[in-house]
Each structure stands twice: as structure tokens, then as C-alpha cells.
Length: 622
Image (tube, rainbow, N blue to C red; front, top):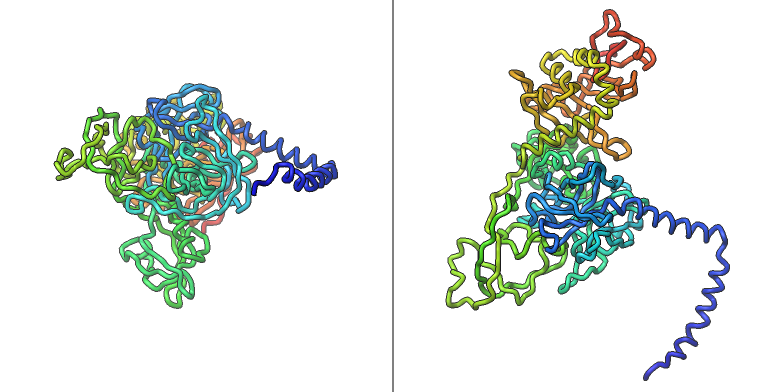
């Protein structure tokens, strides 16, 4: 029976009238709050709109993905699977309608992250970093990017939804070691092919995640309201390694656990690993990891997934009736087969073999098309393949070394396709480009000098800065400390390398390794972010290089304050061990006394951090 339109209208009219009456009855203050919330949302979008990047390879007509600028100097986060096909460079579009060249800085195949650097502006718009640890289910979330390459004018698409889940775990590929999404955020904000690598913002416009995966229907790759974003906390942990230009490595405790009746139980452990040497054995209960109480095996898996290899963590477990606690460095999680990475290569023509088998498109990365790929790239069997779900009617490509020749008589002929030959393997844990690493070292030291008060202010107090290094009882470390403040430190150091990430003073840190002519190597740790999650480069720690990487003996610096035109640390400690146990602490006198003092107090230690000299008192040794 056909229902007449007027009958439908007659049925709905009373409800519409009632709704209108209720709308007219909205209190003015309630209406004002609704309008203000709308205005705030629009303002939040405007604030970060210019920081969203439409990612392309060298040819913008092929494929596309997304990214987000996190620093005015052009550094941007994106997905590894977005830049993988593009190689070392490409183009990025911003909302100003312009295309900018980008270079690859570092990549994290295990966690599906990469950092690129855009060129062409003195200062790019950058998005403020948020705190994904405080994200709750039900919070508003905005996804921005370049889905289906809709951003032809380079302006991003914005979708609004809510956080559907937190601390999710999505297994990876390549033997489960690549493209792993641990401790990630699940959202119903629309994430489609091309959104990969783009930002997930909270309602105030703070970056809380990097969009990368979605659960899609069997055909057509249509969003069904289930998307996943890498937490910004994980990205922060890997930022130093990424900015160092490394192929990042993820961590493992070298032990596995399951949920038992009495807690989280160890079922296997490498007794030669750091945690094995600490005494962990099968049957023991894991109580805490990285200073967080552990309540489930999945929680532990989420936490360890977001840690870089070599990360110092505190571990606590129960062995029989005894509780054991200690600090250790996490070991590296070996990849199955690493992605191919190298310079552009000439394509070769290969004929296809038989029909391609149908693949399951659920829970796979959603990059749209691989940037700069004019045709599919050959991929090892256990390597991540983020490309579009293949059409079952599309012929498959043969693998090199396949004994079945492409022109074998039992193979059905098909159209000829273009594929790229294999490229040299990237090496996990190593710096991809030494020259680029050195450039980042220079950038880091310039940021540090700017924090101190600028090069002019440092030069005006050069003499005191030279004496500042005398705080330390190691002449080589003191000399290297003084060089940090010279006009051209890169020219003075014989060797300089940004090794990557570490912790110092309980904070995320860059670890810089330097060597003077004919001298031992020294290590310096600089902060990555401040308490506001803004970039801030401050010296946190200094030590001679050793296998212990500062865990044997080091100096830490804290409580930075302005002193006579420079910012300086007012607390210096001699520490030992990964736990940084304080052996001695030196505290500087009040700033007004320090500013007037010509030098160290009579009889007192000649103690100073960088840009710090004056009256000090020695605290009780511990």
C-alpha cells in the first residue's frame, strides 16, 4: 500500500509544532551557551586549519595522504605507510593553496609514524600538542585531512565525532611487528582513505592523535564509523628518534604474560634479558611497568608497544613471596622483514601472473593511494602493504625469483603492468642520513641558545660561560660543555650526532653525542617538550659516554630561572643509575644575589650549569 505524502505530514505536524514550542522556550542563557560552543568549535578549527598537510609524492597527481605540522620550522607528523612509497621526498599542500617540498626526516615502521620537514617558509602554522592520556570515551574529536584526495585546493576536510574507545590494541603486519597500533584511540569521526597521517584534534584544537587505520566494509572501503588514531603520547616518545633521522625500533621486555586468577602472570621470559637478570621467572606476577600498576596483560602490551628500544623503565614483580623492583633498559623488538627504502629507481615492465586472491580489507591502514606510485610496488610477503584493497579481477604480480615464469603456459595472460624493482633495505636503529642528522643537531643547539636568551646575550657573558663548565670534575666533559655555547659549536666539535631519544630527569629527552679533538665522547640530554607540551630545548643532563649511557655517573640540571639576561638552572645534582639516585646536590643562591655576585663564593665549589655562575651552597651528600 502506498502511503500518501500528506498523511505523513499530518502525522508529523503535531510533533513538529511541539518541538517548535519547546525551541521557543529555550532559556536565553542556554541558547547563549549553545551558540558559544558552536563559536568555540569553529574557532578551534580555524586555529589549526593551516597546520594540516595534504601529503603527496613527487607527482601530486598520484595518490595522497595527510599530515600535520607540529613545529613552525616545518616539522610534520604523518604515517609511515603514507610516505613509504614516496621515498625521501615529496610535496605537501597547505590551506593557503600552496604546495611545499618536503624531505623525509625519520620513520617508525613499527608504530606507523614518520616525520617530514616542509621547506619554503620561515615560519609555518603549527598545531599545539595535547595530552592523549586524559582523553575520555565520549569526548568530542575532530579528524582533518585529505580523504579521497578531495583537497584539490589543499584545504582539509573536517569531520566531527566522539571518542568511542581508548587504550585499544590493533595488531600489526609483517609478522605482527609493523604497523602496530597499541594504546590507540578509537573514534567514530569519519576516517577514510586519504585521512591517514592526518591529525585527530580535541574540541579545543589540541592534537591528540594521528589517524591511520579504519575498519571498512568488505568492498569499496567505505567508512563505517570505526577509526583508529595513534596516541600523541606515543608520538612524543618517538619524536627524538624520528627527528634524529632514524629507522625507529620498538621495545620489548623479552617476556610474555597472561591474565591469571591472582594477577598478570609471566608465562615466558628470556633469562638473559635485563628483566631475566633481575630475577623474573615463569609464574611470577607483574605488578608495575614504567611506574604504572599493571592490572591486565593487555594493559602491559599497550604500554610496552608505545616505548622505544632502549627506553629506561622501572619494573616491579612478585617472585614467590618476595617483591622485586628495579630499573632497566628495554631491549629492541626485531622486525620481521623491514620495508624497502632508498633513492628513486627506474621502473621495469613485468607481465602479471594469475588472478589475484581476494584480501580481507577489515582493520587495514587507509592511505588512499600510495603517494608517487604510478603502479603497485612489489612487497615482501610479511611486509606491510597499505595500498587500496585490490580488485579481485586485477592480475597479481610475480615475485622475483619465482620458479613459475610469468609466461608459463598454465598462466592466464593479462595486461602488462609497471612495478618498481626492490630497493636497499633500511637498517633499524641506524641514522638514515648523517648530513641531515647534523643539520638537526645545529637546529637543536640554536633552539637551546634561543632559550638561554639569544646568541647576543650568550656572547655578552662568554667569559662566565667558559667558567660555567668548571662545575664538573671531568675536564673533557667541562670543555665540551663550554663548546655548547660557542658561536659555531658544530665547527668546534670533531664529531656530533643526535643519537635519538632517552629519558633524563624523568622527562623525554634528546641524547646528543659529541667529541672534541683527541678527546673522549660526551653525552648531553636536552628536553623535548615542556609542561605545556610545547617544544622547549633545555639542558637536562651531562655525562661521559660509556656503555651505561649516563647510568654510571652523570650531572642533572633543573629549576631554570632568568639570571642577568640569561636563563639558567638553579639546581645541579650528581646522580647515578637509571633511577638517577642523587649523590650530591648543589643549589644556587637567590637570583638577585647571583646576578650581583662576580664569581663563586670563597671556599665554595666552582659550580655552575651552562650560563650559571655565582654564589652556591652545597647540600648534604646522599
